[in-house]
Image 1 (cartoon, helix red, strand yellow):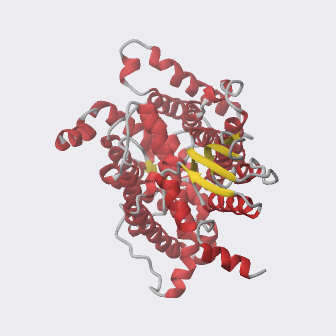
Image 2 (image 1 turned 180 degrees about the vertical axis):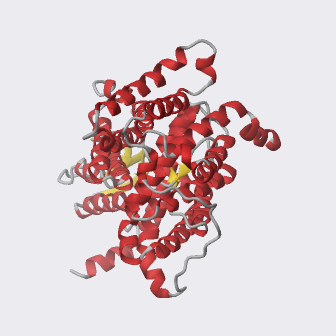
Image 3 (image 1 turned 135 degrees about the vertical axis):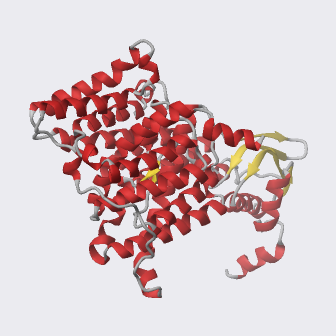
Length: 497
């Protein structure tokens, strides 16, 4: 069964994976160069990283068909380190980033993805789509009309080519767009921006390279403040992208294996002179839309990338940036969740607020981790507030023996603890109070403290208090942290007065 699954991952979609890998490799080249420039390093650092990370995650990653390489989110975090300490310290930080990510995998932190709500994922996706589109704007400002014509033509090819009979379904339209527009630009000798203008392409294969830094505490103090956020942002973007690809392909993936795979890939990149990277939502969507599904597409994307930049660099330099801009605009359009705009009218305000807040923070700060953190925080607060409304207390009085029975229904925790306390009438003259907890659950210290307060207040008023119906989990936390049935603890508190 395992062998069959492995065979399906690698050989279940050979034609689609080969063509998709070729398209992704072409789209990776300008991105890797651009991200190297952002980080302040030579273009070969981003290109070598993209090759290493793509190949390693193809073999040991947890999500077949997902593309990992050098990314803008990671590059932004490296700028200060490169500026102040140089490339060698970046390579060392990349190795440490990988170590942290492997540890995260063994600690099963990938499972934390289930705590991220759908509205946060939607906001993350929409923000990335906007950022991908914004990243293309420099290529579309202060340029000649040829660039706009090429970009428009590229989009027309991408969206119309699939409608052609037979051939439209067999060849990915983004690949056709890149080949046709490159041919047109070379034939007409158009004076437009090309991949060659982005930076110098490497002319040698990557070699093993141990970072030239002293192995001491001072080096650790320099790289640690960069390695931690790199590891967090890398895993966050990778796991979110894996979730999105899961949805697009209607398949599941191993998030903890992905954490380990990303870590090993970053260690490999650091040892080959590359920068840290993670999953790329844009290229992953290109891969899926171009027919890529298996590990072969990711492996070939890395191999094709290296072959093209090292051995076919004279051809690759000629690719007009307008062709790649058209592909990336297609990605941003395809990535954006247009249904989320339509659903704004019917979804609750809290859900919409979480989605919009995530988008705004990510786009404003260009920090994916910060946006997701804000989204998760808001979602948690809204959820806690909503659950607290489902807690209520009603009661009835037995006049014969002057006993009032309070029935508590719902979840008692930090957000509903005050509401729980306020539901009792402590001024009523009673002989006995029965608190029925059959339909209640106590979750935390705040809820236990609230129960103690209620019991002790009634006793102070001279009423006997009886608790009934506690479930096992609630009973455990109340026995451990409650004081109302522990005279010695009450004595300690009262002894201070």
